[in-house]
Length: 335
Image 1 (tube, rainbow, N blue to C red):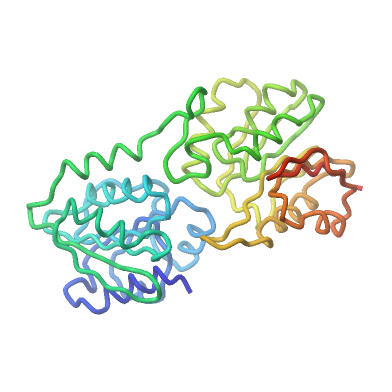
Image 2 (image 1 turned 90 degrees about the vertical axis):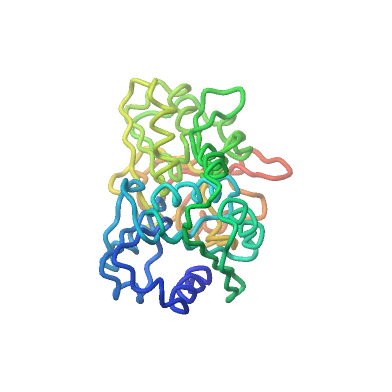
């Protein structure tokens, strides 16, 4: 169960004026059985596993936030402050005059704080608390403070990592700095990689940029990333490289379509706000299945994550290539 989603659905069900709307837009869409009763619901979801679940449920989906306006806009934002406020503004820009915005967040993601933020723009809000989450909605009465929404909209525009050429966006992983674990891996990647290489969980392209600058014998580099926004940033960040690069909006845990001579990764280990070691281990399993015999794996991980046992069980010969108080590098060869 997604508690924020259930709270949002409950808020809708307890307000007859909102259900069922003739048309609705869902930003950060999560599938729910009750939505099958809605005549026209379009979803946008930048995260591939959730987008796949929305598709599997049979709901219409847009790859980008669709243009147009709707009488009802639902939003399930993430915990990033800038992203959430930018999504408030995005939802406002898609709302018909007199329409209603509905948001839901976990309490641990700052739901109460964000409700207060939204009240600066809309003034009157109706709120419901359930499942340790908060849902709140507001109906456009023509008196909203549009300057606040304009300020929030600017938070969603592309931004630069300071003192670099890299472009990122609010809400994606490591959007305002180079991840120190990825930096450690970049500092130790060898220059003799060749053939076809994959970057799993490629983010906005930092490791891929390092590979392309350092390894002249790489013939093709494939980026696999579940966040469509991060992948769009990676396209911009790698545009100056002339070698063959392919970009895959892809859930790595479902497997890869090709085999590789080398794989690099800084695998995710969170599902929502909870640590999920199995998620990282699934990346290792996919790498084991996708490397050619003798292929090489280059992995950075937080020191406490128990990936060494997983590497051994998957048939890798591995070594600790470097470590610091926070991170470790595990380099492995497929037997």
